[in-house]
Length: 262
DNA sequence: ATGGTCGAAAGTCGA
Image (cartoon, rainbow, N blue to C red; front, side, top):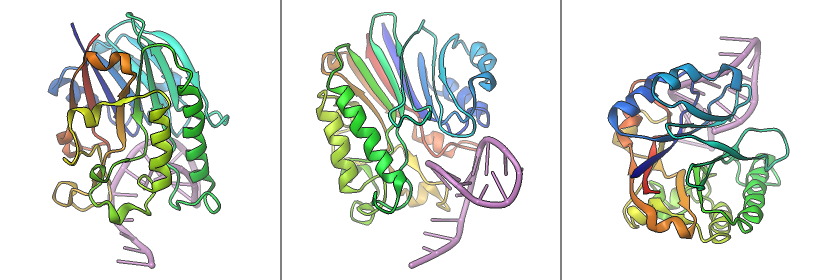
């Protein structure tokens, strides 16, 4: 039986309930992993998700910023929660699915504007976050899915203009190399690029600041779904729901959906 | 070279 798992940076779950409804009217989703929920767990709109058939949830929220959540039609078991910066930010939560697969939902720090850790502590914290994830990921034993907003577009075809973005946080060589080390640490399979091979462009994010996101199409692929090697054979399809960027009061990210035979 | 737009929150900060 196919299971469809979505990853979406929703940019405030309370500000955009209409987007969740529209997503589910547009395509089928069994497990929805959200990033940037921007609310504490006691103000999470749980009843709305209940009404949509997502009766199982795992929340890691905080006031104002960050926050991740896993909403599911299937039972979930709390598996892990990580704080890679040891600063209390809610960025990594994991659930165990009924078949034993562990689903990790991660919101990697954006990293500020200046790509130099000497001048911008946020950039250093982003690299440290990924380094600590790399040390952890190398020790993982369970069949796992690692997805979320990684805030890095690794390949030249993952951005609208490779050369123009080499100095822009999200596409700098040091970030790309750091993300590659994380990927190598567990031989994670990048489903985005498995199903949409390079050199085809693939984006999941378009800035709010563009006058016309679709016409200028200055996108980046910041969101990813990776699977551990033993799960690779279960992956059936991948969808980026690009039209969602044009919906009413959109998030700047679009849903990324993978289908598995799990 | 800068600013452009969002959300949360109540002045700005982070993205």
